[in-house]
Length: 111
Length: 111
Image 1 (cartoon, rainbow over the protein chains, first blue to last red):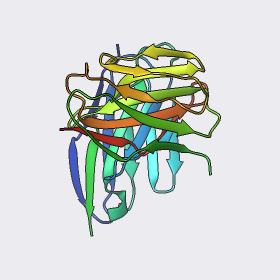
Image 2 (cartoon, chains in turn orange, brown; image 1 turned 180 degrees about the vertical axis):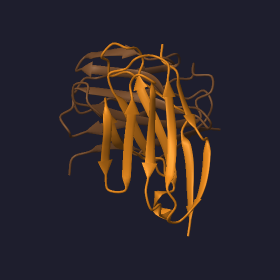
Image 3 (cartoon, rainbow over the protein chains, first blue to last red; image 1 turned 60 degrees about the vertical axis):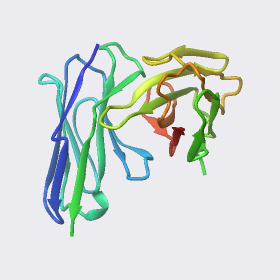
Image 4 (cartoon, rainbow over the protein chains, first blue to last red; image 1 turned 135 degrees about the horizontal axis):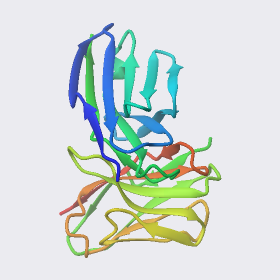
């Protein structure tokens, strides 16, 4: 069964800083998900990626399948980026839609 | 607008009472999921359904029950057998094995 670890658990930044959040997993996967949870609790899917890199606005997600590691980067961070960022992967190496989730990285960006 | 709705946003119940959480989606997704989120822990899968009239237990199904009589609806009942029901509950749906779309969540407090 896959285990997911995220680092750091908490992150504080000044507006404009470059942010990196890391995710490591233990079992080979078909795809990895990055999610964003706002203070109200609602969750938004940011990326689903299985190789290389994806970019959406100021967000960039990368994955290294061999090293079982993914990173989420935020360029020119802004207070509205403050949220919990969650990494999720399939439970096993088989193609499956059952996900297991990291505990999240709480990001606070101050003006 | 397509999306997932959960109601109510906040729910209070007395200990020993069953309570049903609503989840509706108009995305025409086949798969639906219920997760539980506790402070400091990742989301954990309670039940999931990949098609109407079929559902499977997740990792923490004890004390919960579900039904999937319609494609759009996947209600979750928290029974009195659930030892620690106070938590944040999230519903999600997905088309095939693609990214999951999450509802806004219901925060259940048992008094």
